[in-house]
Length: 461
Image (cartoon, rainbow, N blue to C red; front, side, top):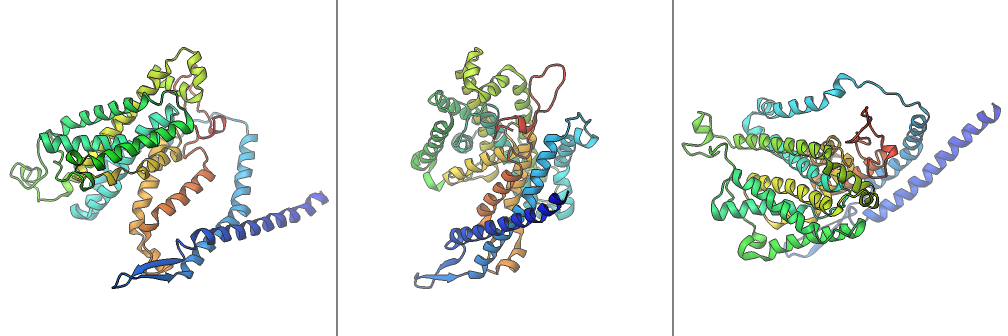
């Protein structure tokens, strides 16, 4: 007992000493990384001569945040996580009955989404609701749909795809070009865009049938860049970097959202407002997301879904069971690409303008990050990750109060990728298998049980 009492202060002292060393090291590393990025600001005078301003105060704040954060991480967070992990491993696993809220959380979320536009309109009015319905509601749901489509390829089939934005671009340009040149409606072009994107998904799938891991990622990355370069250089059709503008809007059963006598507002005797079209688009993308989730859940329970999961876990064992890996990979690529095409056509109808700048590699990286952070194979976790990541970056535009801490020249949205990366690091430390680290198997014997993330391969939670 005496030895234990005497050892405790020594252990705490060594922990604090280790934390101080790591905090100092982190501060020095932060200083080196952010010295040019944060410490200096460049500008131009009236004669276009470059001027360099020093920002030592802002640099010191970033260094202090990194050092203090590392100190707190070592002293408090890491021991807490270690204790929780040990307690969880030692505890006897007991089947607990889910609470009422946990059972019906998805229904509550759906009801909240359905009533989201009316509530926002009642609080801020029609014009004031545009920002919340469009920038937060529609934007987040687009990324939810894209991430759920990529989840079929990455989360269920285990095929690392870094060029998923190419299918997004195919759907957007399919709608933009066919509607502009041939006058086809949105409801006709929506399935056509998905079919064309699925076709290109199969085109990508054939050359990569024998590739896995890093090699597959490189080829899919190249495919995404090829599509983007084609859109830039095929100026006769795509108009290159100028993009396609004046894209026709979607209609509600043939009723346009404009100021014409046959428009939505005049037909129902409502005052003219652009909010009606945004609310219509919100419910449209919500329906598309629900269709994506329903199809994914149904496919996962079918033999093709089980083949995807078998391919993800072990391709050699999958072949030994007689599963045709060629058709399994092609179906994953084509179905995932189809949902990307649907989202792309919706994006073109929402924006009214598309250009290659909207389909850069960073979009693929963000979508893949949402899938990984949410938990591969988990629709609920991916939706939560999309809300946190996409909604978080949009919230930065509203955080003007940060200028009181970092100075009047601080522009929060310019640092969104930096904060996005920091958030990813924090989430991966606390939840290495994503927000949802357990999942229920699609096939089970007698009783359905959740598989804990600790029993699954790293990154496959």
